[in-house]
Image 1: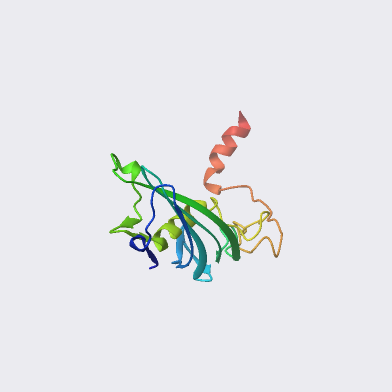
Image 2: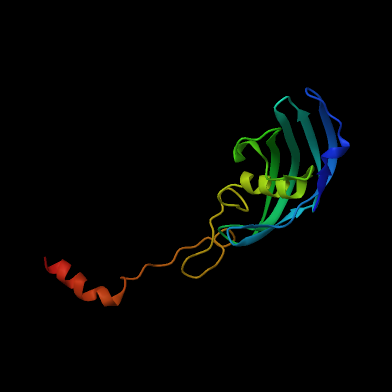
Length: 168
């Protein structure tokens, strides 16, 4: 876990601090699949702005995730740019004015980075935009071996209903 100690900053209202911090990213579970950040430790830019009503945090970095394609289960690589912001009020009146990543003047950068990556992910992680997926009949990868199967007459259990339809 990577954290940042805010006590070492002596910021007054209107002042800003920028720092480069290497943050450890944990593997991401998404859609029942595991995606690994490469590299596991990413260089980030942390900005802390002190205002009269609170503190604004900004975290920026790029990461690359490796894991299975949603459609064909082949290797997928996804570049994810992150530009996340959080706010912590000096005297919070509600939970909306606090950040869950701050406790005892320590900012949990690993958890914040992990959550930011998850929120930036697309609905489906694909190996390529035009991925054809797997054949629903035989399970072969349609990207490597495009093909079609002949359709049969259907389920024989419905045969009696088909005959009735034909007579009407």
